[in-house]
Length: 144
Image 1 (cartoon, rainbow, N blue to C red):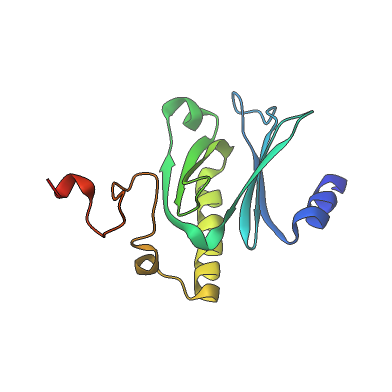
Image 2 (image 1 turned 135 degrees about the horizontal axis):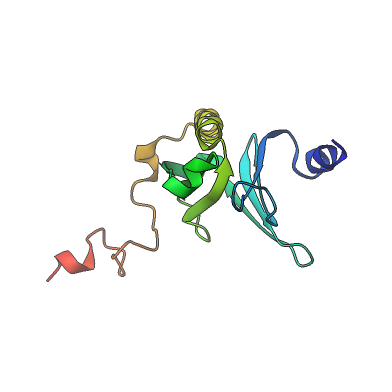
């Protein structure tokens, strides 16, 4: 409980936390923290690396339930976002993945409503997969 209070002081209102599981046990040093505005990934024990994604930038989610993870009640959730440094984020081998997906989906919807963002508002934003190097609005492979 003291650890949750510490996380609340660091990140604000926490909606969900989870850990990467190995063989169904949360013995990894990867922690996922969902607040009301962002998703934070903390990795490491001695040297800690944190990565954040603003929730209103998330535009797609996919849930994968491999057989080995399903046996122990885990799954992998993949988020696609219009974040420049993390366009794809995987929450690997988390417990109760359907509940986590539902919570993240609801938090994303609330943030998009707050900022009046819809999927059509993100069309045209550059992502690493775009092939328009001269920014003329036409993919370079179509110009030939």
